[in-house]
Image (cartoon, rainbow, N blue to C red):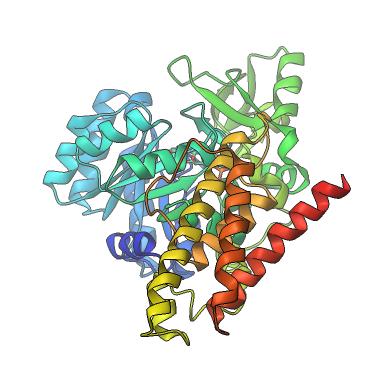
Length: 452
Ligand SMILES: Cc1cc2nc3c(=O)[nH]c(=O)nc-3n(C[C@H](O)[C@H](O)[C@H](O)COP(=O)(O)O)c2cc1C
């Protein structure tokens, strides 16, 4: 499955599928990164504040598994400067292919890594930050919506932030926050993302270094069980929100012991940002049980390879056997293969189809903008998934911002009118089938709202 943007990302990262695993500090070690790479994706080792010996060991372990494409995640803002310098120097010494960073921008770190020939990705929570990071020289941006598990940088929903970032920068943009399914991937690509980055969905995988207790809690949780909070703050500079399972705050607040657990003998204070790992013992239920709003799709502890493959399979299946046609050629290419090819009609239809694509994209963006302001919902609903699917099939991903002044229902009406004009002019073709499906979907929505 390829869009121009995802092809560019896969070429930059040298991976087969546009699915990245987040550099989760603690849980994302070599086992997870190797498993994601083996499935064709791209993994980041979560090495925030880790000593250089551990980073060296984990990088060597990934290479022992014969994977050359992987990255290291570091967070300058929450790392003592001397340690950060050592970490960066080690990444350079080891020729780590990609370093992903997060939180306050550090242009000096970006420059040092770039001079050493290392690609740099930066995770952002706002358009301003994305533009500043691009100006500082990053190769890839990760737009993190507030649906994300773990530390959450911004305040916008992914469905609003992502298309704004895509419009504002040139470098590939990866979507993150609450994503857990193939239809999420399709919708993110239709909004111009080059790929997706998963945290929670892989945190629960067999290869993650998270404690089994944390994984079991994820399997049982729903989006509404998560909350954004400042409660877990020890070890981080102040003012950083995290998304965790709500119960962790309640159990922690009810307890009094200043030390709740130990990790490899190291005491973990109450309200620390540490989450429970395989090596942690103690009152795990009182620790930061990170979870994004996609947690409702996590129903079993699977291997990371299975998670990646299931997401890809579902994405392809949602494009309904039109995968050949949906190699994201533009609508022009569809028509070149169609019955009207070469005729005067082709030009008219081509223009109409492009307008359908543009209206579809506008409708999707307006729908996402107008979604109710629920504090703990996954980023995309069923309507967004359906619009995203059709936009991707029409090759209409990321072709400019459309007419933002319309309302969603105006855009839907315009779409219906366009299809009513266009369909009678078309001969049978895959494109016509797909547009008929779209017209059917719109009609069902009208019927349902009439019934209501
Ligand atoms: C357990 C956990 C730890 C995380 N640690 C880090 C980290 O060390 N560095 C980082 O850049 N992002 C970290 N994140 C955030 C991820 O990069 C990403 O934004 C997030 O996982 C995406 O949302 P999702 O969890 O809903 O998929 C963490 C996320 C989780 C769930």
